[in-house]
Image (cartoon, rainbow, N blue to C red):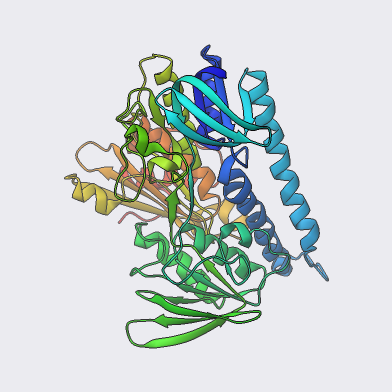
Length: 465
């Protein structure tokens, strides 16, 4: 029987980070991963999707290069080479994680784990069944794509994000059911690669929960490229053909038929807990099956922790990283807690969306008297020089003292720009702090400074409202 101070079940962003930090703190640490070291993010999520999105964006740029005076003839994509490159990116990162685990003294076991008790984990691997006596356990098993009644994945015409990342050519017609982050990122990507895209979303807007001001620009661009959007609509039934699928869509005004080569189902995710046997030790979950924890990542059962997506939304790798550190430090007896002010988010649509802190609506609902100020990328020299003038930076601040409550960005490199905003919110900065900070020129980050100057009532590169 193996013995460990801490056994981490799941080698995704939350799990492997937790294991590394625990080992650094002197705990004998065992990391059990069933299939993919690096988790869904590395193998079928963040990394491969952004690899393909990068190529799709570059391909579109090449096709539009003539407007910059750059003449390119016969540009095309070798999809076999593209998939090979994507796989190489994944392999390099997996090798890096393996090296970090080994270098920090984490013992890695590939196998399926089950909780056998408060201090026991059972691991089934190619070598057989092995029991681990452990003082503490961290659950980091993540989530899996959810299905709809009557619409199950078959990997052929009804696909999940995993299969969507492995296609050897773009489908002529792609039907995306679910206009959330995953669905819309794929919609924008495959649209750039030449697919005709239709998105069916149950709620009244794409990217439910996001600031409508940001979403409108993304939807406008998507529809301008020929994309179709059906809001407040649902797929009532599907019929699978030999090489396509026909969906009956209830739009509220009637039922229409939509045929596509592939149907990408992206209607949320469910926690991977069914094989863990958690009920035997009484670990509490919410109505959707996500594990409940306190701010130290501990469940209601002493010595049992949970981190990452298995804890519930927001389902973000960077949030899982930090939770993994908190769980490791908690297990080691250190004074620690998940007490960050904001978890920034980035959506790789066209254009990108990134947010940190409160939106205007949420700030008002929280009782603040707010001020909102925007600065358009069209007024930035850097945005114009790269041919990406669409979008804006919006700062939401407390009208009484200027404290930054939230920042929303839609436009080029929004995913990279949002970190400054997250730091400002975390540090309790005011709009004056941002406005007085010199930003290099010409850069996109000047948009934050300019929006802050407007909030101060001292705009330079836009007229005072």
